[in-house]
Length: 534
Image (cartoon, rainbow, N blue to C red; front, side, top):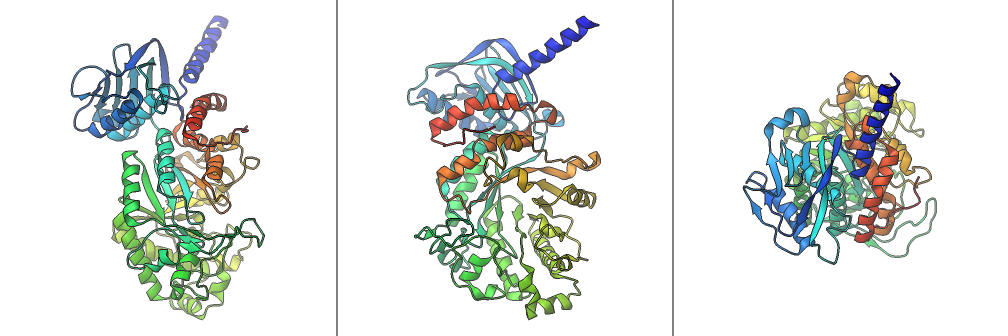
């Protein structure tokens, strides 16, 4: 019996060691390591058919840069073999893959191009850290003999960038998409509108970017009147957005745009004052925080404006999910508005929050009529999640449309339980665990890594209602790319593993060892990551 236990201990140790030697983030489901290597050199070909040709082209471009030669793509023979096998969908789903490297070839097999793409990302991580970026061309590299069977825990693995507060631009977004792809993250949540800036060109309403895309100055410190002393501006043309969407699609990333409503609307109201309840603001606010005015959702002209905007958004973004925000609406203004109060009475509603659900359902119905699905922060359910909100303001009788995706960011497990038992799909982005603008003292790497999108206390039969998780880069106090990178990296890697790796395979010590290879990549790319993590 003791001998059997000892053998088991050695077996577990060998499995752990095997995983550790393959420094892939997020950690794969199953890994076994052989004795030899596969030699990858400037004569290695890619074997692919027409179905997987896009993935072959993507991989070839990487090899071309590293070897300085043109990689041959052929339909038969040996080399790096990319194979679509629809039968694998039963066991590995649409995103899973099988990778095997032997002395003679490398095989990546999956049920779809998405799975092949993720297999390629794992292959990239088996290569030296400088393989793709070295100024000196490689002649050959050795790939360890491995066998990997892998699939994600969750289907929604998101990173959010807030560009309303501080605009970053196309190249920064593409760089982030590149890092997301390597980490097998598949949703880029793009926060494009808010109080301090409107960053998406809407042809029917040009002032949204002409006025709303510019602010005269910016608050530089919390709870302070200090300003930077210079303007901030920027927005994306529709052509630029299409270019970024195409870039994301090549990397198997869905872009979910966020168009805030009914609150966080001051940049739009500055552009067209008739959109607001107060209508007094004609300049984009320079300061941050929860601001009073919001879209006047009692006015039919405002509803028309919002649906016009969404029509153009639908035309641009091929994905069928659009995020409407819906958070932090300041109901005091609603309570003092005769027009809003009349609307509440006319519709037989019980409170401002009831009116917000009524409006949100109008938006959801409109989206469904256009084959889209609405997503919003969890205030759209009507629950009181803020200490400053009066209970009477959130007495609700309306029920949120069942098709809505509830983006949970604030509250406790009881709210999640209530949502999933009522049939709602959830993306869990609990702020204390996923907000990348928080400093490392409040949200250290180890805490980020420990996050479980399915909290304790949720019945197993509802686990599939939790689609996955997201991490959020809010940018009020993060004006520069250097600061942003310092907040994002290395925590984005932790969130990638949260979304992909099964709980039983997660290991923080192995994760931090694997980060050593990533740090080398980031250093070569000039990404200034936070190094004093725990």
